[in-house]
Image (tube, rainbow, N blue to C red):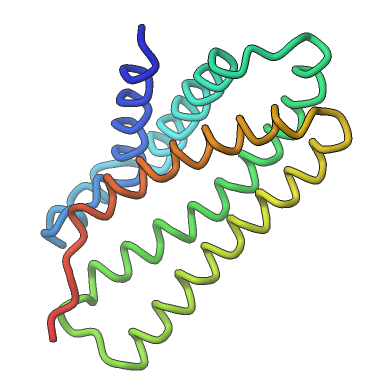
Length: 167
């Protein structure tokens, strides 16, 4: 299986897990209601497993590097899940209000998005600092590059169907 095929699979699962945001708010509500909390958590778990397998395949850690990386990575993923919960919440709220968004709500949306972005950046910095004690910088940067690319692909997939704010 090629890297591209794996990424496409991960993106597909991530998009599904993040509720396949679409331009039609009724479709989003229906998708949200049709996925139970336990099903949602199973999808997220599957995504994390596939993502970890992709990272392991691409990074080709030595045994010593793997011993240093994976505990930090597992904590990173747990912390990232909480941030992504907020991201999903923001998207749901936006979709339900985008047609009637007032300036106060728009400013709150901006604050919420900046907060999620900052928390993600802070988490990556924290993870880098933890890994910097045990791994070469080049190895950490390779992982961060892969992590960022995967997140950009997921974000692009989610953003493509988000409705724009009308004047």
